[in-house]
Image (tube, rainbow, N blue to C red; front, side, top):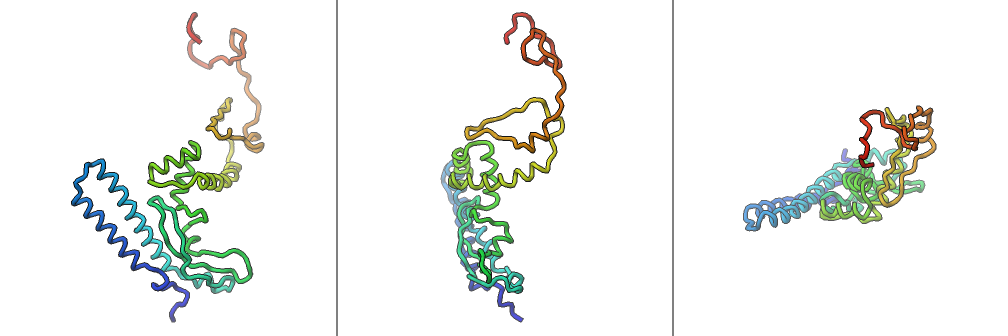
Length: 244
């Protein structure tokens, strides 16, 4: 019996995407064989063409997964009904923005809609691919959002907006606190707390984190001259007249 809930070729332009991908690849071959540019100019142009091919290949992947997707498991319990067979969207990948489509299911008793393909592939509402989200999030832990945007622009040829990077960091940050709460204090935790300020705001330790770190401190020998500095555990004393 034919599965009426399986997406057909008519619902998804897979043939057109495959044709476009072959054209992109042929452009790359012709460019590499006939280019008279210097290597510097050749490499810059090649990066642009490779990104175009990457977008086309991502399109092939998304359309093929959309075509193979079976909706019957999501519809058989009656909780959802089919809204649109091909709801268009753009996904911002490492190669640039890629248009694709996926089925949209509507709950029968109210509530938000559901995109089975997005859930299956791990795509979020941010419209960024998981790899781009990871890159932006990691960079934003080391530099400002504006600097992160410039680095992404240099690496990828495009960049998410500063506001989007901020939302990515806040979204990932919500998972950080539950993760840290289940961890014990670091082994061999030292006596000195070092805070690095990156220009936005200093990190703040929660009471739960401070409770893990608090404890009896071993007395430290004071400096021989009577100052408040602690004496070093090892190493020779500086010679008389040495600089501070």
